[in-house]
Amino acid sequence: MKIFLDTADLAEIRRAAEAGLIDGITTNPSLLAKVTGDREPREIFREICEVVDGPISAEVVATDTEGMVREGRSLSELHDNIVVKLPLTEAGLRACRTLSGEGVATNVTLCFSTAQALLAAKAGATFISPFVGRLDDVGHDGMEIIAEIRQVYDQYGYDTEILAASLRHPRHVLEAMLMGADAATLPSAVLYKLLRHPLTDAGLEQFLADWKGTGKSL
Ligand code: G3P
Image (cartoon, rainbow, N blue to C red; front, side, top):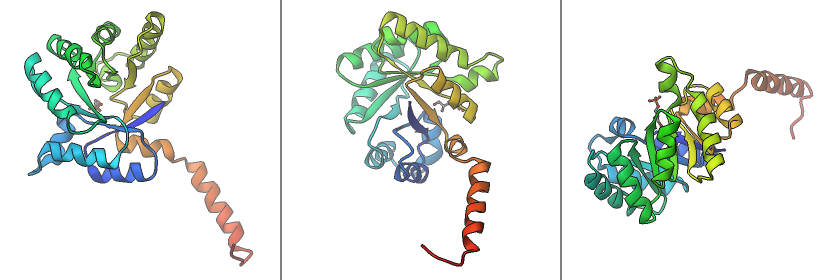
């Protein structure tokens, strides 16, 4: 399963990329707004593309098809790795069909049902982003749609990749793996929780204490 980092923060991106922990990046307008300041958003996307060699999702902010297609074409010209992120609305699916037909990679976002995921696949989406945590927030079992979408895509032969999103803790990531998601996007906090284990820390401390007793170096 591919792991993407869900952020537009370049320091976080550099740290994870240099450690070889991530395969790509997802952003959204809220994440981009946190880091933009005086900078041009396109400059930020270009810089992310220089740091990470993998799919980089950049989301449109237009709400009409024409505007989404215009923004999508322009974003996709920034770098070969740009994936144009589009909301799962009628206008978004129309834009997805147009952009996918032109060979532009797309990520259909804000997916909250298996039926929506089927429509995105039919529109030619490269990735579908079901939002697990936000479904949990309103009392559903968000992971259920990951399993359902996997079943439906396999049953009908769609090659749209399932990108589990809005993952809030390591258990979400584990379940996404077990359900056969193609990719998962995580905030840094969740990524490093996957990496760390108290028994690893305790084990290392013991090894080093035992070795120190020998007074030798390697
Ligand atoms: O990739 C989608 C993600 O950014 C949404 O996460 O935690 O805001 O629901 P969250």
